[in-house]
Amino acid sequence: MFFTIILVSVLSVEGKMRVYLTDTPIQKIGGRLYKQEMLTGNFKDPKELAYDSSTRNLYFMYMDDVLQNSGRAYVNIITKSSRKVNGISRNKATAVDGESGDVYFGSDNGLYKYDPVSNEATDIGLYNMNIFKIVIRNNDIYIIDANNHMIYKIFNLGTRAVRVGDMKTVMDFDVDYNGNIHFVTMCGVFCAIDGAQVVKNNDLSVVYHFLSDEHKTFGVTDDGLYELDCFNGTAKRVATLHFFPRSIIFGDYGDIFYALDDNIYRLKPISSYVVYNVKRN
Image (cartoon, rainbow, N blue to C red; front, side, top):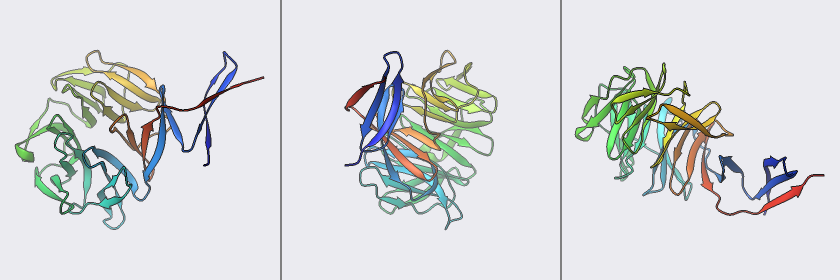
């Protein structure tokens, strides 16, 4: 077995160097170590990751040379086998309903739903909307319409859209488990409490990616990962990222998935390891 030596930190006060020996690359995010595992490197510029815990499939969009446009595919995080999804030629958004396992795609001509039996995505409505972002939380579907960069909530099985608030120039957003909408516009970073009262974040002017677990929402910025406080309009830096992801989401059991260049990675928390403390002369 070959080992990779990763220098994580230097404890200068005690004059010790802490070195971790691993058989695979690792990443350190905050106080936690992760084993880095590449899931696939066969797709160009993958992004818009969406994970289905029931099938262990990770869905995403990518640039397809045959389509001369964006396509969609999935990779199984256990077998690492991948497959392209048929039925839509200009994919812009990807999302999975964590409760039902239903998979949705957005395009410039509406909303599509994936049929795993036929491996095809079929248009189900909203044909006049240019959907480039989908978020599904607690069985509710939200989208950004690229025609006006506003957020809409979807009803009637994907056939009716109702505008949420009056947020303009929205570039990205997420909905946390309490129903608060975190979003970024040309004017800064905001949070709509319960989808209504809007609070501007006083600490951040831009967030490139939002990601939420059951308790907290985080934002990826140029200098790391920040925990966002919706009610107070504040942000606390919690970790440095040694990579700048094209897309990043949480998975099961503390896993993190992210896309970088033409690769998609899985970060698995390391629960035990051997540490050698080497004294420096």
